[in-house]
Image: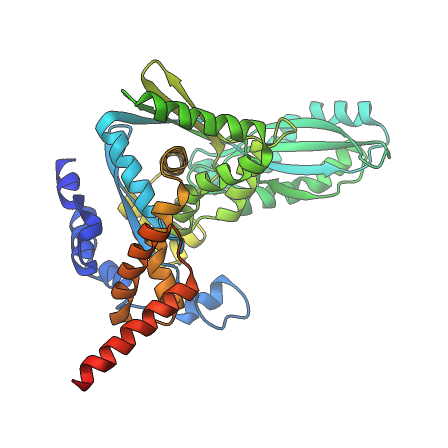
Length: 432
């Protein structure tokens, strides 16, 4: 623990080469893994041909690490693949505050994913429902026979639930079977889809009704990750400001959408880095946020005495085996950096980082505002967009930061003006 804290102290001030050196030391990366991270070893387009269709190239996304995280008493380095300025900086700074003044605790609620077998227009609901319930064990046996390797690892279908849903076109009733499966350390999408389709003919035979869709659900409310943060002796005005920001999100779905986007700023980059389906998780989180019929924030912050207490509970169906987690050369390295081998661990870390990211945003909103910190870091992006060469970026960035301090705003036009002034100055100096 002390080794990680020592090696990540002042991490943002180090050169990229020194950062890589320390990550290698902390995570015990091989020379081959280091070459992959540093870009010396590039990913073959032949691999891409097996991942997607009509391949023409790659769209690289920067990979960084968030530091200062202590989750469940363990120091963790967080790999984040993301293009947006300030996410990693805000996450690291907020985690440092929590580590100094509080703690992060996580746990899981459930381990099951959901597959749906839909009977779209049931003629005899009571009989179909009764018949399917009576043959539940038979259907579970058939389902598990389709996935013997998963069953051998301790996973498999655990239950089948039957839901009755009125058709929205006033055309009768749907029945939907929920196939509840423990995928162990896999995300499990392909597994559960195969199970659902394999059950189709038997469900039709038992129910004497037609089966429609057979597909997984991304609303995995049977596989939740929970994280809780406690920060001691928080300044009362700051605590009230964070509480008020949370109440705003609870009262207004327009604010809740941005609130939750901030949470996913912390979660998505980890999912991308580890080769997980971030789109599936996003869909599940947003659906879970709206499960009451109104869209709500997925985090809650409140003052308890002098302590600030935060909580997040979100569906996180992720995997540490299978799919892109093994095929993409960066994903196994990211998992190694996290020091996780089980999906449950990964999900809990994602939830914790999402909660911390949210706190960082709310703290900024309740104090200096979101623009100051974000735009200071965004200045380098503006320099690049203005056409600055590598050797010019720092100078343009620094002058933009000064403009922001004085004028409270910066934009691309101002970046171009600064770049032009720098180049004119360099040209004049060269003539002397």
